[in-house]
Image (tube, rainbow over all chains, first blue to last red; front, side, top):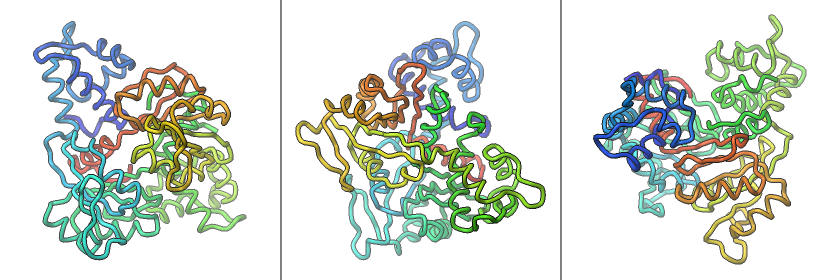
Length: 213
Length: 213
């Protein structure tokens, strides 16, 4: 496993590979990087590089054993490694994430949300997940061994929330608030900025850079 | 402008720089990469590299003219370049994006959403934006010079939607559906996979790689 060497772009293609392999190949068969690239409309060099980083080189002529390749890809994205996740900020985005079903594919589950507007009895999201008052954050994280906190509060409240999450034992933060957080060095922070993503695409159109990103 | 050379990580920091410069510096003053790095808790090498890519090197000792630096950053993210955007798929995520206010910072505006469940009269999002039936997509895009289409439909419907968007004249696609789209080579597709982003953070925690991404 060479996890640190794999780019986010490669990681972004892993579910694409996994989906194709699960749906279109049979266990015990083989598949070449060339075939996979053609089927998925991706560059062959790119696919070869991705698979090599995650599963090692394919065998000459036969390519990859599909079962082994699927297992390597699954190991890589962390399937099977359970990790509790909580959201702080149950606005529109927080609730959309709370009810989003795709996280389970990677062995991750958003257990609950917390919101300053909830004062007494917990509320429920559309899918029935609990939304608790902020004062329950710390106890909940401890009881459920929460590893990741997602911040979807306004920028002005984000630093304080980050500190509460760190104090509650989370080991990484996914931040949707437009701000920079100050947290201990050993806590990775991943920033998500929807506006920036769209601006980035707009720039790619302007500069005429096509392809998949 | 060296747009093609700038990474997405750098682009992700641009709003952070802009916010700080707008709020904490005065026009006519100067700021050094060192100061900016300290204030924002970022690595100095990183800040220097970012600013150099976007605005050229700062002057020795004095650093950057704050007004010029802000202008260069704004030009870079495309402020002032108006571009219409539509969303296809007005589920929870589609509506969250439709009502998200941050896009305006980059001169981008989501004008409307389209959804197969809307059959007759347009509906409205919480913020009052229209949600139209699918049959109005093409005419709307033509009338409003729409450049970007956001796909937030289920994976099974995404390819067809992509084709409709391309036929309606959009020049780039931002895809939230977990699938690979097949579109003409000159149409950039940017994939967003929420589950993957969270899995990526989880991996960073597991491999002990901290820092900001």
